[in-house]
Image 1: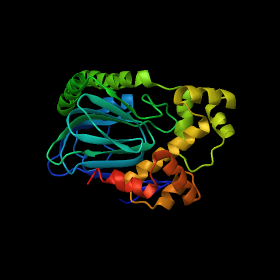
Image 2: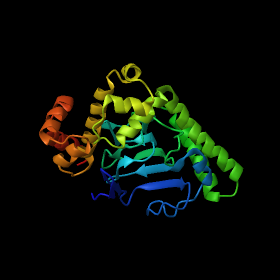
Image 3: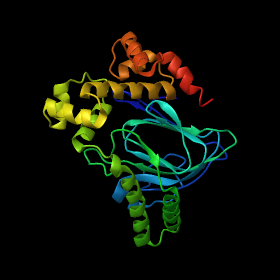
Image 4: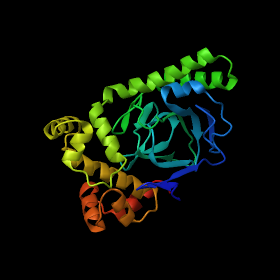
Length: 300
């Protein structure tokens, strides 16, 4: 897997669909030139809700997607079948009627879990412009049961109207309904906006030597208030949470890329790979090399 670009960190994207995978989707505009989106209908109403594209997939082996450091939240709902999603560095087996929101600037990775069993799901991909406040935001992945039948019906309505492309007022209502379902899913798990801003900045540059004073300045909080909020929401101190974010990013990179451990250590803020390996083993109970072997075995 080759880097797309480098801005202080490796960015990669991989799509393996296979011949049997089927999809229906809509996109907000014609700017996305990727092959799998190139001939899909355009639904400008999605842009009103910061949605880049949305649709329904019947994925079959060898379906696999990896996007490191994705800009924008990604929402996925399992309708049936067997799939796995990478959450906090570990593969999660999806179940029917379960939804997952992956936050912006995190690694997105998912694949079919079984060779002879399709995985049916709906998805919504968000992306906000630089300096624009996201409509859907979370600082951590969210996993919970969800009304998949209703959401599936709404997605079918959006797709059918967008494919015809004539009744713009109705298309707008379907797009709003899709976004409303996602927003209601996220609402019970929303975090303090000041902390969301802070963790987003840190996720975008985990290699920076973050200090408590620098973090408090970004969040526009005193250091003591920042400590209290972070303890309340994450049960750890701000610097402990930075280490937690670094470990999650490292685990995701070990699982989804072939980058050397030294490069991963540097990307997440460790100049010494030995110190990184010690910290990683303490967090995950396995050294990085063995963790990589264990996690990638799930895809084979």
